Image (cartoon, rainbow, N blue to C red; front, side, top):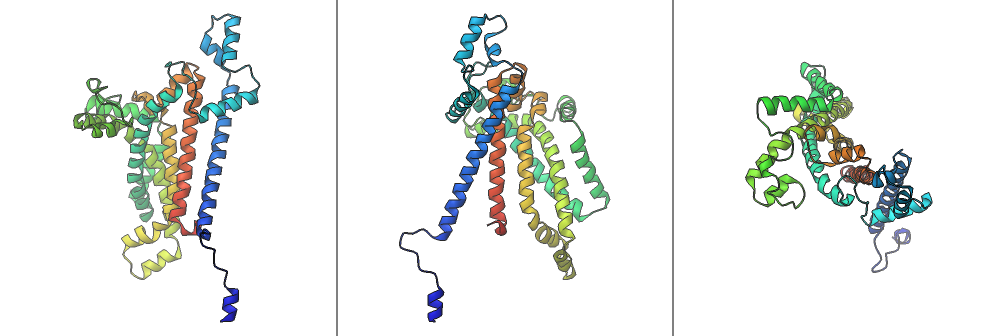
Length: 357
């Protein structure tokens, strides 16, 4: 008994945080530092890309007919006469205060433009990833459970089409069939023209804003417009998620514990969805996160085809007009989305997998 008392660790003083709280604080501090450093690196990349691109931001502002004196005055006003390191410090300071400059295309602050255009992309991509997960995961599990069957081959063909069919072509075919021919869905844009501007934006997402305002007619009109572009995005997400789910499941179904469960007479449904599927939830979180970030970043073609007023259309217009403030601001937002989604995936990974804790 004396030996046990000597070997036992001394009790913590009153008010002293427990080791668990200390570990949580260290993990939280490490997370914040990593997030800040990653975001700083993202700002550095966007800044230097803006300086490497062979587009003169001063010339984009003053125009081709400006005199040399006007050009020099604009260059000084924009701070481009300073050394590169001073320009970067000023850029970081402006970004941290929410100042991304003024857009040449719209004449408004870039931060204000991004707040107007990003919700449309976020809304469409979110619905797309919901469709992709809701269909892709069951299809991948079914393909693995029936490996080599005609159903497995059909699902793999669907996945192959998702990798090979161009997004703009699929969008145009969808418009020609479901809008022009069958008239099952709404046309390009977020709303019919006579509904445009009737709902005051709260979140910027028309579906949520219409429900908040109690405008059910506008809500269903918005659903008819968003369902086709979101389904096209969801199809490409579905192809990736189904393929990765099938691969993960095939690896689990070949494990000994699955064979043991089958030998014991456990129903096949429980073997597949409890014994084999539970271990793949963690890697699936990463797959879904990457797919979601890809939809937010890669919806340029879909937004162009469907005249969707989102971040992709804004970025395309900015590139065509050599609007570098808008290009860098949109690129920064896309990069920040990737960072946030990756960090959320890491958190979910730790929650779902006790070994990571």
